[in-house]
Image (cartoon, rainbow, N blue to C red; front, side, top):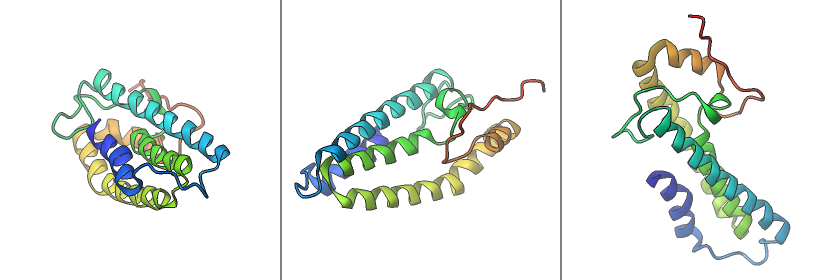
Length: 155
């Protein structure tokens, strides 16, 4: 949880001091921001737990999973943890009325998308082969499915 905490908590604090912009921090947006922040933290906790329980490991490269994680929210989208961090950042942007955090969220997602494409996906193909390829074909990377993906267990 260290990396998501740094990216979704420490960096926004360093950028804003968590001081609201009184001109832009209006209560309806603040309520939406609070909901997004809490939801993002909830998704992060769920996704991390899936890695520990289902994958028998962690998201960290130093303690990788033994099994491919495809349950829970991972049945809807391949990268719920990264999306959750972006949601936490955007939630704080609304909560504090700080546009700098919207720009930071966009930069975060650009870097993460490149990292996923250039490092994570090739690594998962090497590690899990056809199992990951089938998962990748059935579950979008960034836009959640409306219905949960079901792996083909007939093989």
